[in-house]
Length: 616
Image 1 (cartoon, rainbow, N blue to C red):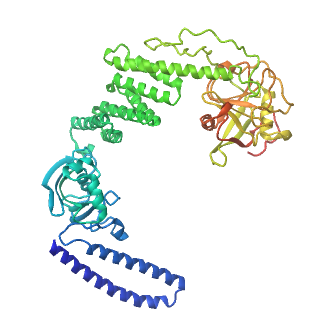
Image 2: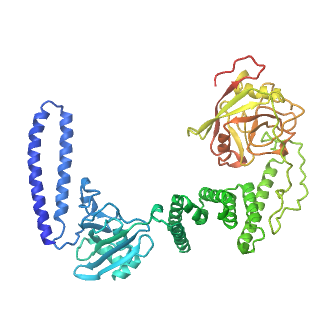
Image 3: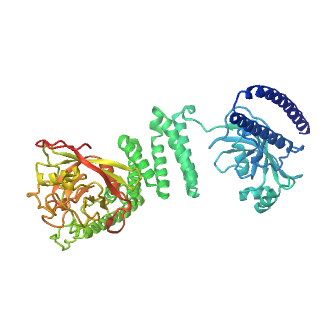
């Protein structure tokens, strides 16, 4: 080590002399070049040269601080110049906090470094001053499986190449097990490491002897080997999940899924069941962390695979349906959650081996039905009269009596009753009618003031069945007679029901007017029904009280049929309506983010109209 130190000093001296000679040559050339250049360019080049010289001085200072006995001195990461970063010659701050500083003693070969699940063989020893803490020992372990003799050694090995030797200065032992094996206290190393004393810090010497990377799907020839490896990764994730290490368990499941997706041909059939199991476990992790979108995605893949391939099995399909139902229940999509949970029970059937899962599905199904009924009751309480007089949206002559309770208000033990668990059951929605081509209009809506989140919703109006109402809406879009929807807001949003707007006078749901006056009558008979999402209908305060307010349904609403005039449908931009539907709301269901109609107009007039529409 002393010889190496003297050789390094000699090389550094010669390097400095050569660089000094080059600097003199550059000065002569620079003098001739600067004669015809401006002052700004000269100052810029001087600044660059000064920075280059400062980095050279810092590098020499670092090299001089390597002790002759080979131990790493208390050198901080910021001592090194930028050109040293990423090279083996530069000491490396492994954790970025100065607690582990690695200096390469002997370079390795190749380019690959140990990664997750790679098998390594390393030799290590540790000392503190002149005292030996650990004798030279050789160990073999799997990376990221908590098998390393010391965690600080694994962190160091993950930065090394094969046959590389390095010294690691340990200023602070972060892991309690490492402190116990080294025979030092964590507080002691933290205190002595901060003092800068080389006799107090722990120095570990590490040599990476062998590296066996984790296998690739193309490297395993046998299909059984590939299946066993996917199963090994999945079991490793299960073990970490039992130890409450969610982050590491998810990494194992993702590795199993990635490896399984790389298998081709016959191997893909062999690993299909293990791949589905790994996806379900990853979905469970996502449910635990409340990442319901990820859980839905993984469960959808398993359900799709179970439908296409019988070898996945009904048990995994039932689990996927159950966990997807749980995710949808947490996202308040009660209707779809009930469907998934009922489908899971249907798949399980009379299979007594999965009785535990069946009990869990029944319990969750009862919860979903209760929440669905509660949400429906809340909507009926608020809109059973279909909005009170202040809201400007309800019929005052709606019967206020509560219907008789349904016999199926509580699901049976098997959970296989019909969908009429809502109390009271709603009638089936009617189908969409065929209409003659009518006028097409649009509303351009922005979600949130100056947010840039905006889009256009286009409608086709039913001028054949509701001509008076369609003309009123088209005129308000075109801005005729000084009335326009431009500048008004969507003032009420009910998730899984509708969005409401069109108050052109007060902008709060209590006003509104029409081109015929303050209000106009319903067009009888009301032929169209609220058959599904995207139906454009008139708001009212009761019979014959139509003005400018309208609403757009986001699902079928057959209980509104015959009481509100349907006069159009959405033909483009339903995704924007859905986005508005999911905006957070406050008191009286008013959106917390303003949903403003920035512009409106007529895209094309009706067949009998000759007046050219205003440009969109």
